[in-house]
Image 1 (cartoon, rainbow, N blue to C red):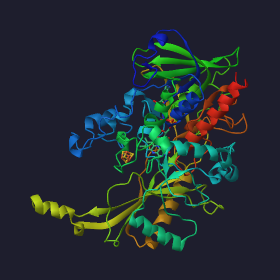
Image 2 (cartoon, rainbow, N blue to C red):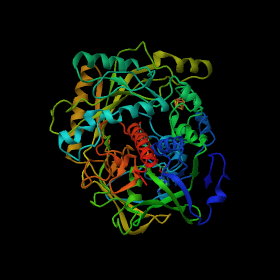
Image 3 (cartoon, helix red, strand yellow):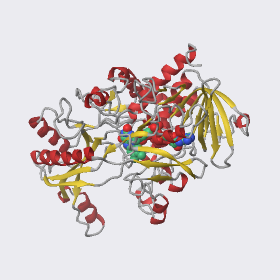
Image 4 (cartoon, rainbow, N blue to C red):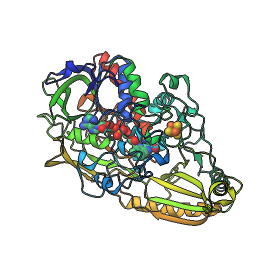
Length: 582
Ligand SMILES: Cc1cc2nc3c(=O)[nH]c(=O)nc-3n(C[C@H](O)[C@H](O)[C@H](O)COP(=O)(O)OP(=O)(O)OC[C@H]3O[C@@H](n4cnc5c(N)ncnc54)[C@H](O)[C@@H]3O)c2cc1C
Ligand code: SF4
C-alpha cells in the first residue's frame, strides 16, 4: 500500500502502481528506530523520500488497540493462549510478549529462518519496527566503548570516536526527549536530559552502600526515552507528558515515549516529502555496473507478490541488523556476486549481541516504612566497572546492569467487601523489599558468529531463508561467573538477604541487541562501511542500523543508531548536493 500521508490510503498510489518505476531522491528501507530518523532528516533537508516497510501500517494512536485496556478487558488476563504461542514460537518466552502486545510481534511463518545454533530473532515487522516495543533505555557510548576493539585487540578499530558522535547524540536526544540525571561519569557521558525518574528507596540505599565501599560502582537511575517534562519541540510533535503508566509497549496514547510512529515518521510526513510504502518487502538493492552505483531497489508486494522497481540517488538500509545483512547478501550483481559491497567476503560475519544470561536477586529486611507509589517506566542502572582503566580479569570487556526493585505483598485475601479492601490496602501486609540486577554483557564479535543465505530454500515472499550461526563463547561464560560473584558480594555488603544467582540460559538474540555483519572500519579490506556509514565500494548506499556496529559496548545500542543515522544523512545530503555523490 502506498501513501503520501500516513492516514491517506489513496495518496499517490495511482502514480506508482503496476510495473512503472518511480523516481525519488532517496529511499529508506525499514521504518524502525533508525529508518524513522533517516526519513525525518532526509525529508527535512528537502529530499523526496520513499520509505519502504515490509509490514503493515501502524498509525500513532489509531492502531494501538489495547492501549487503554484495563486488566479485565483482556480475555486471558494478559496471558497468550497456548495455541497462539505455537504460532509465535520464537518470541513465546520473551518477557514482553503478552496478550496486550502480541499485535506488534511476528509469527514464525511470516519470515522463516534457520537457527544453526539456538538464536531468537525478535522482529517487529510493521511501521515503527521495534520502536513500538523497546524498553527505551538510552545510554550514550563513551570512548571506553569506541576505543575498546583497538585497546583490547579484537574486531577492527572503530573509525570514529566519542567526539565525532557527541553533537549528534545531543541532536537526537533533544528531539526524542531523554530523561536522566547528569551523573558526571566518564564511562557514561551525560546528555541533554529532561528530569530523571526518581530512584526507589532501596536503590538509594544500594547506592549509598556502594558509594561508601567503591569509587567506580555507581548506582544511578536509567536514562530513558520518556517525556518527563515535554519541551516545545515535543508538543510540536503532538506528544505529551509521560503519565508513568508503564504500559508503553502497547503504544502510548500520550506519545509519552519515543517511537518512529509517535515522532519521526509523522514529522517527516508533515514536510510533504515522504511517500510511505507498506506491505512491501525489499528483495534487493539494484547496482548498475556501467554507472558504478546503486540505482534503486526491487520490491515485492507481500500481498500480491508483484515486483516493482523504484529508483533514487541515495539509499539508506535500515531493515534492522539481521534483515539488513540478508538484504545486502541477496543484492548480487556481476560486480558484486557475493552481496552488495562485499569484496572482502566479510558481509554477514562478526555478528555481536548482548549477554543477558545473569541475574542476581535478594531481599532486604528494612525500609519498611516505605512502599512503592505508582509506577515508573524504567529502572535503576549501574554502568560498566570491570576492565575499564586496566585489564583486571581473565575475560575481555565488562557488563552493565539494570536494577529492578519492588516491595512484595503478603496480602491477607480473606473476607469480603470493605474488610477485604482494607486488608489489601494495609501496608502491614507488605513483605520485604526485593531487588534484582540483570546483566548486560559485551560480547566480542567473531568471524564464526555469522549469517548466510540458504542456497535453495525461500520464505513466503520468495526471499532466501537465512541461516543464523551465533553462540556464546568462553569469554561470555567467564563474564557471567564474574557478574554473579561480584553482585553476590555487593548485595551482601548492602545488607541484602536470600541472595540468589541465576543463569537463565537466555538465547542470543532474545535481548534484541543484535549488531554487526556490515561493520564500520578504516580499511576496506576488513570492513564494509567507512566512518560515514557509507559502503566503501558503493558510495550512494548507507547502512545506519545495528548492522554497522563494529563492537557492542555495554550500553543499549539504539540511541547510537539514531545519532549515527542523523550524522550519515547530513554527510550524504551535503555530498549529494556538492556532486561528490552522484
Ligand atoms: C522488548 C524490547 C526491548 C528493547 N529495549 C531496548 C532498550 O531499552 N534500549 C535500546 O537501545 N534498544 C532496545 N531494544 C532494541 C531496539 O528496539 C532496536 O535496537 C531498534 O528498534 C533497532 O532499530 P532498527 O531501525 O535497526 O530496526 P527495527 O526497529 O527492528 O526496524 C526495522 C524495520 O525494517 C523492516 N524491514 C526489515 N526487512 C525489510 C525489507 N527487506 N524490506 C522492507 N522493510 C524491511 C522491519 O519490518 C522493521 O519495521 C528493545 C527491543 C525490544 C523488542
Ligand atoms: S509510561 Fe509514559 S510513555 Fe509509557 S505508556 Fe505510560 S504515559 Fe506512555
